[in-house]
Length: 211
Image (cartoon, rainbow, N blue to C red; front, side):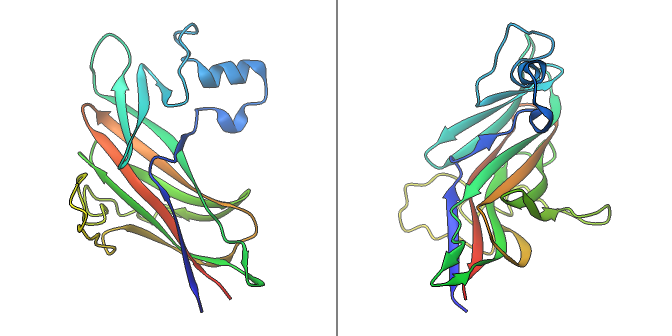
């Protein structure tokens, strides 16, 4: 069975604003875009308020997207909070008359302190069908690690012959699900008393079976 692998670079990310799933009114929209304690201060799409003077910034560089949780008040206190980011995957719904089946989701990432900043949950959506989630229950485990999923290239490099270690990518089994729409990988990132730590995502991909 032919294999189709589709990846998107880490910089092609969108942060989800808090309250977005329930936003349907003017007040809810304002709540999504402005910190509740400072209605005059509006954040753009790359900085999202997490409440309690915690915010997350998404910084895009040539080699990936860097997420930093910080205190946006006058101090530099450790901050905690959760936020989603989303990666749309180029999706081969039908090729040569055959419907594609999503087989594996893969993520290339690293964290400078996995105890402060780490993926908490990963999901895959086919349009509005939630076809994968991890963890998938109280006894399930996401199995995250500081640099175990960096693809074997932990830092930006100008060495063009550097070869990634594809065994060092986070992988989730999608169960060869038929694809009907477009796929997006949603990553819930958790900050626990984070300060001067960051998490980088360099790429997100999905393997498909065709035929």
